[in-house]
Every structure is written in structure tokens, then in C-alpha cells.
Length: 77
Image (cartoon, rainbow, N blue to C red; front, side, top):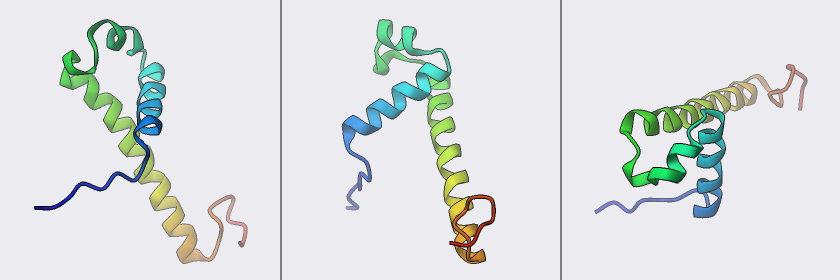
């Protein structure tokens, strides 16, 4: 059976989730209902925003690496 690797500390992941939830205006609902009782549609908005941003950053860094730049304004590393 495959083991799940956690790349971030649990407290750091929770803080990141709350930051995104705050940006989306969902903190009040999360505090009143709790994470377990949140509708999956709204939790998907949080996960989508996190995942989408991480993928964009990874692609930008990979492209910069291939181009020999540091990823900021096309300046060489």
C-alpha cells in the first residue's frame, strides 16, 4: 500500500487553508460549521485556488530553469 507523503507541516497547511478561505470570504462559515460540515463545492474552491496557484508557480520555475533565468523578469540567475 502506498504511503501518503506530506510535504508541508500540518500547522502550515492549516494556516494556508485559512488564508485562502479568508480571501474567499468563507472563514465565518468554517468557524460556525467546522471543516467537516462544509459543502464540498466550497471546499473545492479552496483546494482549487491552492492547487492552481501551486501549479502556476511550479510551471514558472520549470520554464525559468529551462531558459537559464531565475524566474523573475527574465533576468539571468
